[in-house]
Every structure is written in structure tokens, then in C-alpha cells.
Image (tube, rainbow, N blue to C red; front, side):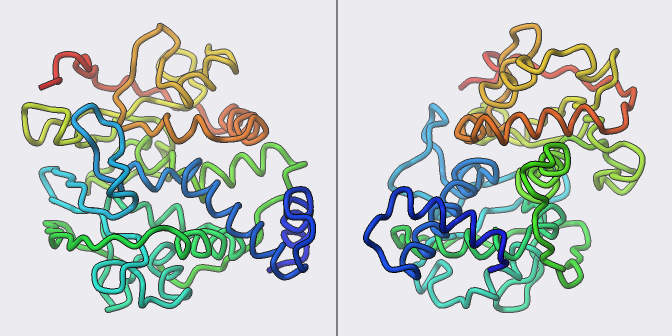
Length: 307
């Protein structure tokens, strides 16, 4: 691990791991960092843990995959992230797991497609990628054979990830940008699609309007689509007139400026576990992105789609 991360992690370990050898303290802190990322800003369980009818996660299927995503161009199933040796990642090396996350290539050489946010994870630091793997090694292995995903669009792997260090937390805007662009994959959903149906990061970053599938357990209408919101600081169609507290509330509770409950496809239950420091950094960064005027499609109410 790089020097600055070692210092941060070792300090956290010493606070809660007195009496452990230095190497054990480092490993304990590494796993803790991975647990925070997976269950907080990366929100891995939002896709990789199957849901009960009330949308609560199935504890017996924690990160075992199999959640279905239906869109006009693909039917995808999330992968099993548990250390099960037959159906999960139990026989994958650390580098194979990291390559799948950051470059979209599996152990078998297959290319991963959406909704796996590989373009975001491509920017993840080596330290955070290593922490996530360390944590995934500790969870309970669950045998769950996942169906094969089917795509009508070409899938392209990413180039080799650079694994550059995260900015220091003292640089609030830069660190907020790192969380958004390397961990929380906000723009994967909240960027307007281009003519190929891919997020238009070049000119409509964060401007919303991307079509997203509703969880099958939620909707009585298979293939129901909702549209992401504009999260740029545009004052008419985005969040330019929202207070910092209102932005934090929509991130952590899924309640917008007008009190409307958002669809739980937004992983606010996971984002609620983020530290106040990280939330402050995200809000600081969102204030700096280019405002884009883009009025998004109105979504049906949550109640109208309940089975």
C-alpha cells in the first residue's frame, strides 16, 4: 500500500486494535476500509444482494448475486461476489477480482456489461481496490449459480487501470470528486444518454435522464423504466437552488427538495452509512461541476408501481 494510506489505516487500526502486531493491525484496518466502501459509497449490495418484496436485502443472500436487470438492450444478472469456490470468486486471485472491477474482464476473459459501473471503478485507487478485495475474502461464501446475462449492445473492456492514489481528504472538492467518480458511480446513472444509449460524459455529465430499470420485485409491469434526475448545479432543472442539507438528504434518505420519495434504485440506504466528512466532500464537489440545463422525464410515483 502507498505510504499515506498505510498511515491512515494503521492509525485507525491502532485506535481499535490495541495489542495486535503491526501487520495484523494493517490487515484489520484494510478490511474495515473495504467494508466501509462495499456497504457505503460503493453500495455493492444494492445490485449484488437479492431483495425481499419490501426491497430490504435478503440477509441469506448477502452479495451472492442473481438480481435481474431488464432493459430494451439487455437482461443482466449481478454476479456472486462471495468467496464460494464454485459459483463465486473463491478461486479468483486478488488481481483477477480487481481487474474485473476496474477493467470489466472476468477470470475467464469475458467482458462485463452494464449495470456494472466499470468506467467508474476504473478510476479507483490500488489501495481502495485492495481493501474491497480484502473485505470480500471475509464474507460468508454462498453457493448461488447466476444465469448468464444477455446483451444486444457491444461490450468493450477498459484499458489497464492506473490505480492512482486518492486525493487527500484535506482537499475536500478533489476527494469528493474521487468518491463520485471512482467509488459511488453517481454519473453512471445520472448522465444523459448519447445516441448509442451510453452516458454522455463529455457534454451532459450529471444532467440526468438516463433510463433505468425498476427492480422486478417492485413493479407489476416487467421492464418498467424510470429516469435519473439532473444533479448538476443548474438552477432550473438541477440542484442549483438546493441547500447542502437538502442534497445530503436526497443522497442518504432518497427524499428530494420538495419532499418526494425517490425510487430505491437510488442506493440511499447504503449512502446513509457514509461518514459526514465524505458526504460534505461529495456536496462540495457537486457544486463545482458544469451546470447543464436538462429537464428530465417525470417518473411515476412509487406507490403506482407497487405490486
